[in-house]
Image 1 (cartoon, rainbow, N blue to C red):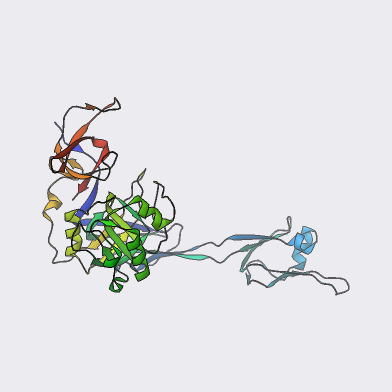
Image 2: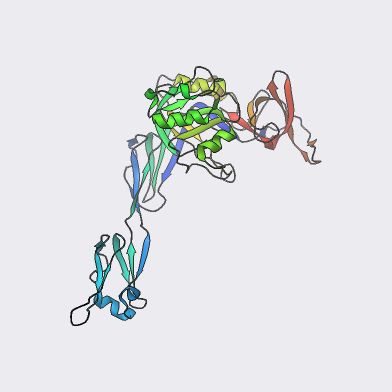
Length: 375
């Protein structure tokens, strides 16, 4: 019989990570190939064009469109500030002149003799791409960005909110089973990536925001707490754009779930080290997982689990997580891999496996409803 494989979350102490860091539009790459960059170094920069602001000068001046240009006090390409005179009528015998003042600041982009409109382009917005992954620039994508690589400890979570954040790892709890509460958050954690054990409460997140914590990593989160953090029910498509004041990465699932003991140990052994975290999550097409990235150092020791199984391989004893009801978020190990498809309650036939949740509790689960906790 051939080997069975399924996708999984990666939790490893040493892997070669490559990150493609690109701009949303063409711009300027700020670094060269083969240079070393820090996590918060700017590697590419561009200017996002400002908003278009049309001004109907013909209406404002009460003249035909063809007469507008002769009355303008500005030219195409000129920088305009709010309140500047754009045009002035000739008046009657030099009296009773009418002026049109600009309601906005920007650059005169175009003037139309056909419509009598003047188009102002608002101030551009600078867009910068940070390295995120500290390491070596192995490729420069001209006008777009770079590819960076480094050996890192990588922990992928199951869910997260907020974008990229940076800071030293700071352990807030002493156990992987201890919930993260407001009392664990101290003023010394400002700018840190705070690690809790089990569930993180809304009150703990609020306290972390007050202190200025950069990010939180915890085992679980309650749906009600998540809604309280955001102020609305979160959809299932994409996260990462939330602006709540910090980034949150959940490693295991929803509810009262303890962090994996191995994941907690990996973070604990690297306390004080600089980490990059990203809460962006996408669970549909083009799966994207939240992550914690910590560069490997010379004195780091490899974890025995890192080479125990092939990537994605289903095997007896392999740790996994169930990602569908009625066991959603439960963690266990593969205890059996039946060769023949099973008939589900719905009447459909599919390949299944047996999961051992510990304490003698086992369940038969479709293989499509699990993801491995990969080394």
